Each structure stands twice: as C-alpha cells, then as structure tokens.
Length: 173
Image (cartoon, rainbow, N blue to C red; front, side, top):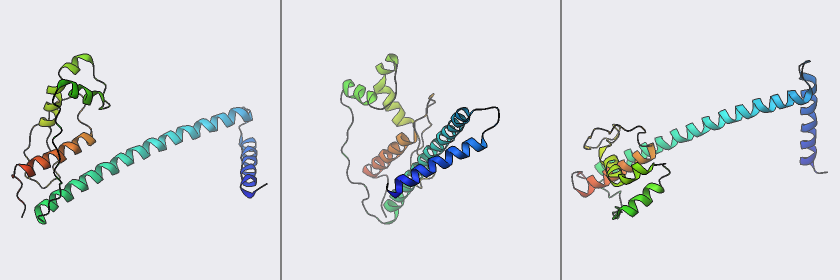
C-alpha cells in the first residue's frame, strides 16, 4: 500500500469517527452525515458564486485598465496602438439573424424581426464610461429591460475608440 492511499484511508476513518462521536443524540450517523454533506455543498455553492463574481470584477477591472492604457498611449506616446480592423458589418438580414442567434441571448420571434434596427440602436445609443480621459461623444443610453453586459460595453468602447481614431477626431500628440 502506497503512502497516499494510506493517508486517504486514515482520513476517511478519522472523519467517520468524528461524525459518530459528534452526532446529536436524536439523529443517526447516516442522517447527520447527510446533513453535514448538505451544509458543505451549500457552502461550496456560495464560494463558487463568490469566486465567479470576483472573477467578473477582475475581468471588468482588466478591461478598464486596458482601455485606459490604450487611450493614454494614444494621447501621450503617439504610437499606433490599434492595428487596423476590418469592418465586419452584417450585409444582410440573414447575417444579422445569425449573429443574434450566436450571441447567447434568447430572443422571441417578434424581436428577431427588428434585430437589425435593434442591434444598430444598441451600438449607437450607449455612452462610454466616464473613466476614459477621451473626448468621446456622449449619447444617452437607451432604456432597455436588460442593459448591455459589461463585455458588450467593452467591445462597444473599443469600437468607439477605433471610430474616433479613424475619423481623426482623436489627435495624437
């Protein structure tokens, strides 16, 4: 028997003895073990949700840092931080529907008919974050039931920076 197997068996035995000795008098060892397993599972799910929230916050902070570095790099260094991006606008309603189907959003049939206008309206109506030191055009946000996700906002801000750079309204010093 190798050492790892011995430690595993010893740990299981120690856990079983601890459960037997600490169980309440009105419960069987099996009931108490199931109760403890439920508590551990609930705690684990709380930890997982907390980890996911913290990971999302880290991603958001990294995106903000990236945008601020790009904007400060464009303004201070005079370097071309953005490589030219090809325009990938959908040319037909089929492409737009394919993009909407692939977005992870569940849309009803009524919403799909106006998907081209809706996607263009969402892109045009969101304003960039106030943390960016750029002279971005501020537009009022559309009132939607579900505001755009932080990932979508990040991509919209990158597109806005690209548009500003291409339109020469952002001058590099």
